[in-house]
Image (spheres, rainbow, N blue to C red):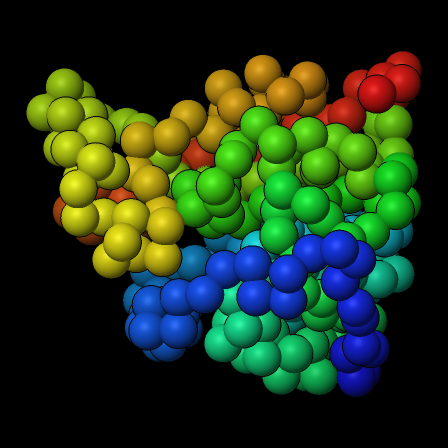
Length: 229
């Protein structure tokens, strides 16, 4: 089904610009679908979703083919131009309606309480302001709305933690499109006021060597049903 056009509201059209990284990421992520088992992770991430869904930082749209038919619409927000164009192409092949829109996680170009669920997949590592981004996710979800998350972050022992922090202060963010290795996505969700559901810590690849970017978490959270924020 063709993707419909969408316009950003008061958000720069290219809020993020990493064209070289975007091209490298696009190639690597496609290979990781089978070689690292990312396709199976996406299936688990999205299984059982329904209604209107907003996906934050959709990248090149690899989640789109895994949305179940119970989803009525996906609004996929992606700030990086190269990745956004690839996401538009992926939306054309999706089995559910996907609307790809420019915009930043810290200022989502959509109305408040407009979505039944939000998907946050390998994006909290690279947003500029995690609390603000999660505040926006909370704003656009209806009370009781669900968050599905798959993120990488801090993990391993003391040596790995030191390595992650050292890379975050030096080479990693400029080489990796603003990505950080030592963030704590579960703690960030809790601090943002979400109710944590079940989550599973894992390494990617699951049977491969542990790298600074290998420590991941897959799970569910909710905006509290009585949340008047």
